[in-house]
Image (cartoon, rainbow, N blue to C red; front, side, top):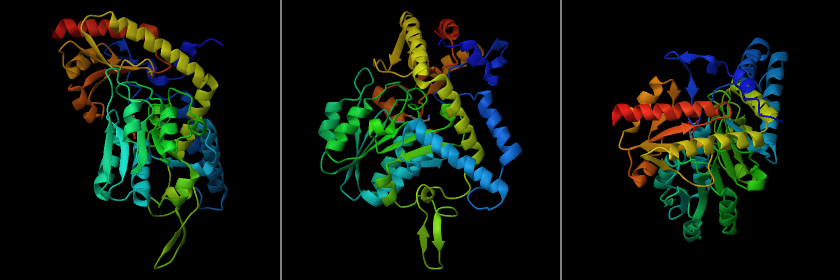
Length: 406
Ligand code: PMP
């Protein structure tokens, strides 16, 4: 089946607009993706027909909304091939998912003198929670470096793993370098030492088919808004054996079984980790986004995005003075670069005036910027609604930025 890009683009109303009298070119997909009409309609449909608080009422609407919410959980289980719906915890995003694991897992399993392994390429969301949890619990955070291509060194991981290691927390795909980490090998290595592995899937799940049972990871965290779904939605997948033992992260309604004046018993999974009224509208949108992606096919999306990545890499490599950050052969569809000595912020401003949204700065990865000794990068991140012609426009905008700023 051919990839009908015009039909796909027509599904995204926001892409139809002009900015600065030019068609909008959106290359900030790693920050957040745009939403297809199907997702927007699912949210309206929910409010027009089903809106009600869930899990609490016996009346018609409450039951209907609860059923819709739990049906979405089943489909998300299927999407990442988790073994059970008990392992799918709805959150407000990857950040909340990662904090949940850091503090709940930390409370249960991390003692003074223990070690947690992470990497220098992590987003702050998968770095600061571990750093702070280790400080609180008297544990040590060990940080894997990257080579000149922006890849992890598995030999270093082998050296770091020891009897004090309690967890490895690594990103599936780097939001700065684009590197797709060899997560299956990482999981296998850690498991040899009996160490569980958390994967930050914020940038993985939107580009690659994810099968958590095949990866055998112990936790997988992601946000809906980078997956063409609404903001304020996210998932924390965790293996039931850990989730059963981990204490609740937040306390309140929904997550309890019985409350007495002097103690409380907690609800079963997944509700133990879902305190308070959830973002039902958002989950309806997340379900619609997953249907949309499944209709196109994650494999086909990966193939098309790789074409965009290869084309952009080839075009930018042919330009003088472009420095790339992240040149692994296993990359998702984003490129980070600097144009000569031009500050990324200045370049971003000129590129914006050409109607092109790119991201500039440290990309919430300050330890990596320090490691690379740069203030930030310009990042163009591609989605399956982007085109080769748009990349040609980016090349023209970079030429213009260089002319104006050199
Ligand atoms: N991890 C990675 C790799 C990311 O790229 C991001 C978002 N930029 C996050 C975590 C945090 O996601 P959110 O802000 O949606 O919680």
